[in-house]
Structures are given as C-alpha cells and as structure tokens.
Length: 442
Ligand code: SF4
Image (cartoon, rainbow, N blue to C red; front, side, top):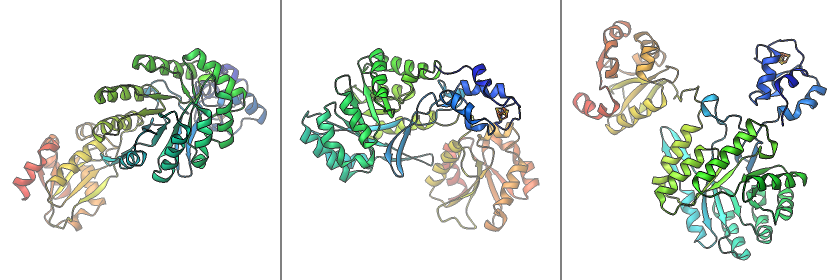
C-alpha cells in the first residue's frame, strides 16, 4: 500500500515555494499520494526524503515496453480510472493473431498492409501475436522465424510450452517481443527466459487470486516487466477483472496489480468480435489480441481508440493557416473554417471531392468548432481578417472573395468591412460544399 498524503507531506521541504506548480507542499503531497504528480517536480526534496518516498512516487501502474529501437510500444504508466479526470496515457496496442498453422507469410503481408488514414491521422495495428496453435515447437519456431523476416511489427509470442518458447525466442529476442505466458507450472523457466532476454513477460492465471499469487512469485524471482492476464475470456468477466485490476492498482495502490494487462477476443462472429474488442479496449486492456484482420472492422475500432486516448481537456486541432488543395492558383476558391480537426478534415474532404483546386483558411480558434468558436468570440470578423493577413491571402488570390460557413452568415457584413473582401455565404454543413462549388465555381 502507498503512503497517505500526510505521510508524504512530512518528508517535503514545507516552504510552499510553488516550484512544483502546486500552491502548497500539502497540495503536492496529496497529488503525489493519488499518483497525479511526480516527485521529480519538487527540486528541493532531499535525497533522504526521495528514498523514503520512492514507493509513493512510483507510478501506480508500471511502464512496460515491448519492442526495440524506434519501434517500441509502451504500456502501463496510467494514473486514471476515468478518462474525463485527466487522460489515459498509452493507447491499447492491437495485435492480430497469426497461428503457426496458418500461411504465416501471407497473413503477415495482410497485417503489414493495415494502414488507414482518417482525419489526418494514420492508424495501424502495432503487433502480431504468433500463436503456437499446432502445439509443435518446430512449427512455432518456423512461424517466429518467418515473422522475423517478414514484418517490422512488434511481436507477442504465444505459447505456454517453455521449451517451445526457448527454441523460438532467440531469433527475435533483440526485437524484445512480449513473451506469453508464465503460468503456475512454467513460471520459473519463463521468468528465466524473460530475464535472460530482457523481454516483457505476460503472466496468466485462472482468476485474480491466483494471478496475485503468481505475480508475487515472479517478482520474488527478481522480474517486474510484467503484463497481466487474469485468464477470463467471457466478455463480462474480462471487463470485471480488468476493472478490478485497474481500481486496485490506482485506488488501493495494490502493487501486485500495478502492471499493464492483456486480453484476447473469443467471438467467432466478426461483428461480435468487434463489439468485444471495443469493450476490452475501453476497459483498461493494454494489449488487445484479435483474430480479424479486416479493414472494415479495424477502422471503427482504431477510430474509437484514437478518440479514447486523446486528452479530453485539449481539443484536437490542425495547424492554423492557409491549406492548399490541389494545384490552387490565384484564381482558386477560398473557403474559411476553424482549426478544429474534425471540422477541418470534413471540409477538406468535401473540397477535395469538388475536384476544383482550392484554398482552405483554417482560423486558429484553439481547436474548437465554428459555432462554438463564434459564441466564444474566437471566430469573428477580426480573427478571420487577422488570419487572412497572416497568410498573405491578398497576394495569393486575385478575386478577393472568401466563402464562410452558412452557420455564421451573420459575419458577412462585418467581415467585408474589416477585410475589404467580398464574403460569400457557403452551405451550413460541409456536406453541401460539392453542390455549392458546382453552382459557384464550376
Ligand atoms: S516545489 Fe517542493 S517545496 Fe516547493 S511547494 Fe512544491 S513540494 Fe513544496
């Protein structure tokens, strides 16, 4: 169990100097006790206090890394139960299963090609889970060897046969795969393999009590880069176990469960698998192992992940300024919107579809949408004019006409006065841009 805020407070300098960005040492101590601050933020804490507070200042969930070099997936180091309190730090890594009974090279090629663009972001799956489905050590090793040569994705090696793991691991040990899994029968050998290779080790048990006992045994052997699998497979049980693990680690500072987690989808029907995966991803799974590699199922899952792991206090924004669509010239239409990412990319997609080279002026509204920014005085005749001047629009475009969203048609008169440009009121929704462009510019 961690220290309380008052216990931590006793070790702090008590000068209330605010260098840690908390108003008092006591406020800092309380934040530290709740895992919402790092001891490093206080520059004046003594070495003796650092030693005394080391367990309190450790993150409630250990940061564990899988992969090597520039290709590392980080997991854990979470401090929140609810995303709206602060943010979740490390997006769930998605792994796609490749059985050693499959055509391994062909499946890897499919997985390597899973790269999707959405609202300016690139989505992909990070990992391949190589499964010893055959139960044959030779086949497992051959599959791992094929993966070593055919994919850059991070790897999860899935076999509870320690001999099979020992044979397969050396070919990819330098890439630091996740070893899955130590269980009550093989944990000594699996821990030895993990320690020897420096790879993270998944720990699998049949329930939370057995998992706690097994984790303690492995930690006693001197290894802590662990990933937890409570062994549950039914959707509701996985959610319950993952929630328990997260709550015990963060609220109760139960160090035994202070590690990232792994879950496997089990549903055969692909739509049901997607729902199951979405539930696991939403409820604290650090590594999600899935069977499907179909783009139409992964895009919504990865889009949901992108939303879940953003900072709720920071709107997602694009770079403000003038964006060029196609080979725009000094005669091309100019559309004006905000730098709220979702709005911008919807507008960009529609403008692109008109096939008329154009400019889009994205005004810096702090990443909020048109009507919200208008209500907050961030999308006004003055801010739009300022943005037009900042990007040198007067020099780039001859016709001096700018299209504003129909939802803020009220800005037309004032913007014409401020900017000296003719203001054309566009459609209320971005979906109307194509029809609008055809009538105005085709
Ligand atoms: S920086 Fe240290 S001494 Fe200063 S207020 Fe924060 S905890 Fe107290």
